[in-house]
Length: 122
Image (tube, rainbow, N blue to C red; front, side, top):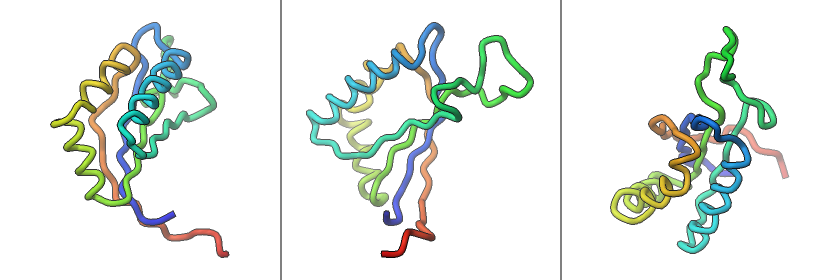
């Protein structure tokens, strides 16, 4: 693994939506990205295996306000900016929200430069 740029966003399911809805949307989005020959790695992280952090009933310990995190990785800022261009000047933004818009909402994405400080020795 080399140094890279990572986009991170917190996402929350919309009312009456959950993992099954997200899996269906992921399949549609994956098919779309494949049709565009997009090779951007995208990862979704949960704090536990499919468990919610922010329960409907509320709990003083459930304070994050999100269900999972959305990550996308780019080899450099050049590739990140190419994605941003596709998002705003191509069809990526409208396609993304046509697939996920009734399943989840996400906060504004943050972009981080990831510096690898250790990998396994060969």
